[in-house]
Amino acid sequence: MSLSRRDFTKSALAAAALAATGAVTLPRAASAATYTAYVMAYFTESPSMQAADYGLHLAVSRDGLNWTPLNQNNPVVTPTAGQQGLRDPQVFRKNDGTFVVIATDLKGTNFGSNSPYLHVWDSVDLTNLTGYRLVRFQTTNDHTWAPTVFWDATRGQYAVVYSAADIFRVNYTSDFRSVSAAQTFFSPGFGVLDADIVVDGGTTYMYYKNLSDGRLYGARSSTGAPSSFTTYTGGLRQGGGIEAPLLLRTNDGGWRLWGDSYSPVNNDYYAWSSGDIGGGSWAVLNQRDYTPPLNAKHGSMTGITEAEYNALLNRWGAPSWVRLKCSSHPDHFVRHLNGVGRIDPYPFDPFRDQLWRLVPGLADSAGVSFESVNVPGSYLRHYNYAIRLAANDNSSTFRADATFYRTAGLADPAWSSFRSYNYPTYHLRHRDYLLRIDPLSSSSSQADRNDATFRVTS
Image (spheres, rainbow, N blue to C red):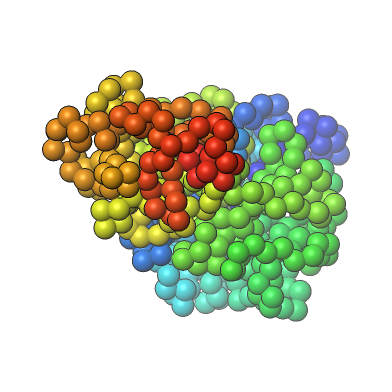
């Protein structure tokens, strides 16, 4: 189960056309704002649920691909009513330029515990969440999952669409406090889950999961009205299973489609890109190109201004730790396991094994050392060329073995490589997933240089 998410942006031309018809007048903040970055809302889970947290998490990104979790990847707010937990949060920019956050009322994975309510918050710029309330959307006992919001210009109201009993239902609202009676929105004759809806010009697009074949599909409508959508794409899938389609109109006018893994034991997100959502053709993005927030599940994304980006970072703060993503295996991250340095496919538990404090080098402050977050005082060091996690004994040998110089990546200068302090021609790399130091240079094989190149991320 996941939330549909959408980036609600209107071109000035579309805004003017709507205003001319008298259907709606968009405030200047919504029609004229320049978005330079993105915000993401999500909750967290990991394979053995060590990271399970059903509060509202936020992350920011410059490119909409690589994300910085805020508040140390802790929730910025947690529901206090209903089931006192959320899933599938959507952050949506309203016509007045402010935000509403709306989410499933469900804590954990007890999917048989149906709630007719959704959690709702208001916010000017997401530095504070106010007006918290639990709003009832259904009179039945069906679940009310994965809400998505779009502006229905014909009605002059917001539509809130959600998964209920293997179909989509909709309620209309002007204030996200009182809502119309629920009605069927999309019932194609097979089970569906997780709608995400965006409006582009005169067309409303909806992407959803087809439960009969486990793939993501796109449908569209010229009105956005209930029962007016026609599927126009083939099924999309990456990995062992996928759900939670997430549509993002990028700030440069392109499109991205994200899909969440079917369960937390698989990779958390996969992505596609397209220059034309109406064409229905999507190109798979390489996992080297994107890094979702740590343990993020079923999120939503939207464009934000430079001022909003800076306000979010100032209010909630960036992580005090980093992760190292491997160039040759972009779904793998550096971790320690039983005292051994290695790379493993993410996600995994204990998830904190991949978190490092990048501190000044123990032997030379111009270099760096990697201190474990969950084993404080222990560092990655080489011993007989193999990388181990060991407690700092403050000897000169330990300090030297645990110090590296960060350089431009041997395989990609936009990434990083790490040269040994006391073996100056040796670099940190993995071989058969185990970390070690080996003599490497720009003339080494492409495969070896890839094994020694990492993205420092969060």
